[in-house]
Image 1 (tube, protein in one colour):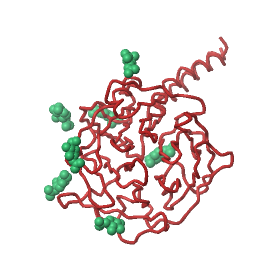
Image 2 (spheres, rainbow, N blue to C red):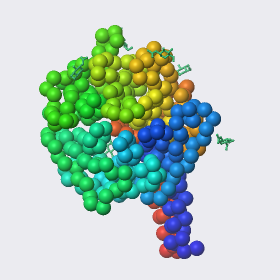
Image 3 (cartoon, rainbow, N blue to C red):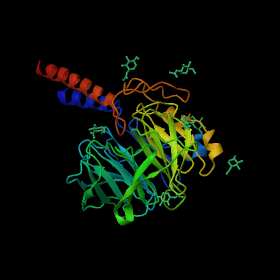
Image 4 (cartoon, rainbow, N blue to C red):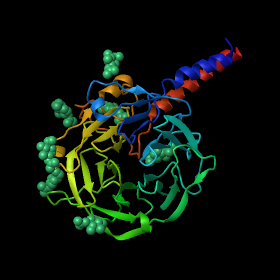
Length: 372
Ligand SMILES: *[C@@H]1O[C@H](CO)[C@@H](O)[C@H](O)[C@H]1NC(C)=O
Ligand SMILES: *[C@@H]1O[C@H](CO)[C@@H](O)[C@H](O)[C@H]1NC(C)=O
Ligand SMILES: *[C@@H]1O[C@H](CO)[C@@H](O)[C@H](O)[C@H]1NC(C)=O
Ligand SMILES: *[C@@H]1O[C@H](CO)[C@@H](O)[C@H](O)[C@H]1NC(C)=O
Ligand SMILES: *[C@@H]1O[C@H](CO)[C@@H](O)[C@H](O)[C@H]1NC(C)=O
Ligand SMILES: *[C@@H]1O[C@H](CO)[C@@H](O)[C@H](O)[C@H]1NC(C)=O
Ligand SMILES: *[C@@H]1O[C@H](CO)[C@@H](O)[C@H](O)[C@H]1NC(C)=O
């Protein structure tokens, strides 16, 4: 066996076990897509499918990203039925991979980063304009996706819109609703209030807006994750905020400026990421476990009684890995373990670095074998 063959075999077998950083998203028909989960892409179907007896469909196809980044994020472009994927290719950190959910095909949009830092940002995709807004390096950037559902051969560019009025130590938490970007956990802003950027006027509203809890107290001022609930059509009006300790889910309505307090995720994982559809909030934990909280817009009593469950049809095709070491989460719907480890915008994948070390070791052995 030649060294090259041996190396190829090692690369092949190792890449199959790499736990990359996946992401979850919905398409416009509210099919739940898990992309880069155990090396494949799956369509879990609509909520009746994943809560019923259906199966997840393997939709893995060519042109997809390697999902070898540590902070992959996915966004639904509702006008185009495309999923935009960032940070899924460590070799091309600023590229945006586009999954056309209608054609079921992938393409890679090349993007010029400029002073935008693709390894440190938070972003929202504006519903009405299909423009990304991101906070990176204390500046607000925009990236106009046009109506792309397949990549254009001309590179797009992040545009530095303006300096944000936030201190350098602000780790951004951004949520979109009613064409406004809500900045949560801004230093110096009272707990329970958000700073607002009005997209259509490109305007940082000077006053913070408060979103009190039903009993008059406030959402804790802490880092966490945010994701907007979609409407069948039209702009989002509500978003969920999940503090890093997973102690609760806060759903903020920006019409009434009120907040619902819902059950915190069963899997307590500071590295989990979230994606809301219309009738559920999805959690993807750092072991690859996918769970959901059912949701009904406008029905506070049903929402406050709702609880988290595992999306079993994804767990059966792509079992969560307990050996990844990223957190001490159980990944089960009854789990109550406490996640630990450094805070991160999205899930890191310590397993992949473990595998890389193992791979390097194996290559070393192969090279010595080759030399002998
Ligand atoms: C799902 O897969 C299982 C096992 O392969 C099979 O028994 C079952 O019939 C499938 N269900 C549907 C709805 O296709
Ligand atoms: C991933 O996110 C963490 C936390 O924000 C950050 O420290 C790290 O640099 C990011 N890594 C990459 C490759 O973007
Ligand atoms: C108000 O409600 C929140 C969320 O349910 C709870 O954590 C908090 O203790 C309550 N505060 C008071 C003063 O009752
Ligand atoms: C909710 O907050 C927005 C933004 O600050 C404000 O324009 C609106 O008047 C508020 N709505 C209510 C019902 O207070
Ligand atoms: C909430 O949902 C329950 C159960 O479906 C229903 O009986 C109730 O009328 C709904 N309430 C509202 C305000 O929609
Ligand atoms: C998980 O828990 C064990 C035992 O409490 C601890 O030794 C280990 O460091 C934890 N791992 C992580 C990644 O937090
Ligand atoms: C986890 O749940 C078990 C069983 O419900 C309970 O006995 C245990 O105290 C819980 N642990 C924590 C840390 O909440």
